[in-house]
Image 1 (tube, one colour):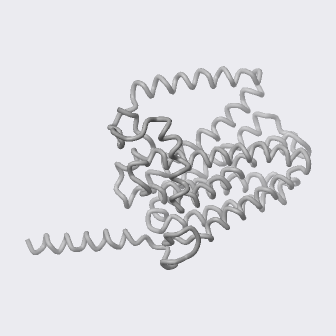
Image 2 (tube, helix red, strand yellow):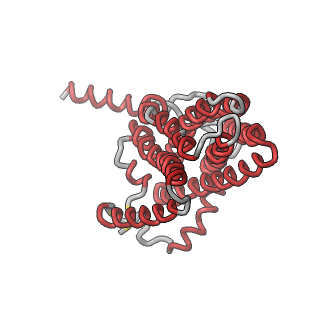
Image 3 (cartoon, helix red, strand yellow):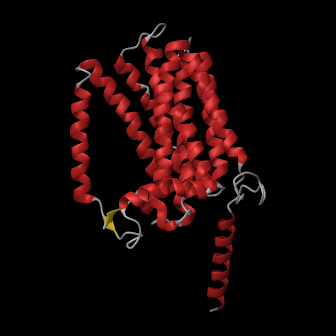
Length: 314
């Protein structure tokens, strides 16, 4: 027996509401990243910065206890399949034979790069003139991103559930690009820059992540955990590159240098979006049409109408 994963939880939701459920779960993941910044800023301001590691240590054990007590189990989807290390080695193979998964992983890498680059370098910007904010006030900026995530379940239900995932991914990337462009070039002289950037990139990142997970959900149903692992590995690699690269660029060229690099990563992410259409079966191209409406919704609506007619006749 194995614990339920995020993808298995969302399999309990009907297809027409799956993106809305995914948005709630994904918001929890991003929420943890943002709350951590508020907490670390408060701890660094009022206690020794080393105390945050003891807090993290205690929270990890608390999570372990809660998972042991409350996490439900479900049967393995591959009871006679690979052993654990074979499953890990099979992840690159999944990416190499699924163009959609490869596309989503590349877009996820670019998206999460700009996310961590912003939140890392924001501390440097606000601690320096003309702001000179302490770590506590800097940490409070995370609440701006938290506010933007409250809209994600509604966006998931009324947009992502109704249109092809690529439409929402492109929309999310454009929202991020708008926020980064504004924040980068006005953030050095007005605090409105980073506020707008925090609001828009968090909204865009959640939209991109929910739509991306919705897109890869149907890839190899018996390998959903490995598909999700491939996506998360790429996203976390993007976070590491964003943190390291953003700090390095800020040290050399300041806020504008790190922000300009983020604009470049978002441009690369959009290039990956437009390289392959929503109905394309191969690696590159837009064969299959340009329609942004989900075709399975039309099929489900037809089936519901036919069922209603059959019930009326009966």
